[in-house]
Image 1 (spheres, rainbow, N blue to C red):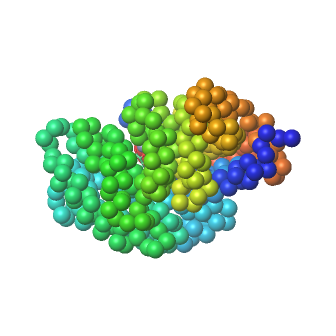
Image 2: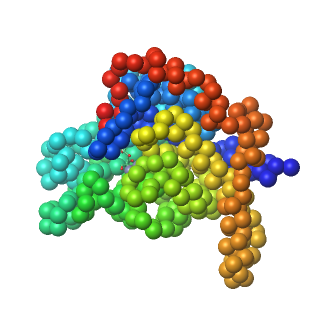
Image 3: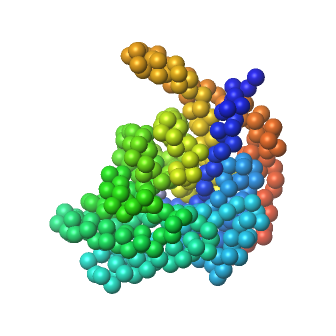
Length: 388
Ligand code: AOS
Ligand code: ZN
Ligand code: ZN
């Protein structure tokens, strides 16, 4: 009898983790971007690579796009292309960080003309969402300041609210605006949306279809992220996750690589708060693969999320609750840790096989020869993506 009961298997079967198109492009640091042979040259090739991850794991049925990096002539065509490969087009990510006009802000800028330009970019993103069938517009803002006194923080917060309201008014009934927060970078003194509280305050003033996006890499070291997860779920405002992991800052490394226990604790709170399997709480990756192959990097990532989900589902909640209520601190902690320390990998391999999937998706993908094939076919193109 598998440690993964039929109930747990049913929960695991619900899992869907959206992949970022930019994970398949070349990326790096400000010191060097190392290219990978076969890197996609356009959004179609990024989607083809993302579809590989889903083919071997059945965990990633959609791909997030980034505008303007993933602009195409026909989104209808791109959508059909994706659907033929078994995936759909997901969240549309806006970009107000690569234009000279936005040096001192975009949605918060002092100049109404520049604010209008940034708003119009978001309206264009919503037009694209209408064509791709995407539900979510995800906004991450690079705005802020580097020096005390450089700017009027209060005025910026007010202008941000006006700009977001204008964008929100254009969001369709079945669409959502998801506002991501980040405590620093590229601004280092103040950031206009630095924390979940600011994001919450902004989206709460807009309406029901405005939610918070929690990027796991966007917190100070030592932050209790699962507490934030609990609170946002409690408030009904956790719209999505950008999963990744970090050793130091916004590293964007493979989720679960730096601190699998933290990922486990986060997923425990998602389940506790009723957010697991709830389409309102979208699981996404926001990662880059700088020195490892990108497709296996994404396969590893979704498997890490699946593994920690399986462990989280093992918690004996009745026993845990009894220990909590009776004040048995050590028993409660032991129940929690027992689930975390359980190696679910053999049971997951067996379960995958029972569903017609490879027991070991990493090995199956490696054996497929896909990387060699794209390295041969895609030579000579302009490589697309982050850092290109
Ligand atoms: C930036 O630090 C944020 O994590 C963004 O979510 C994301 O990486 C970027 O917007 C790519 O589209
Ligand atoms: Zn992010
Ligand atoms: Zn980030």
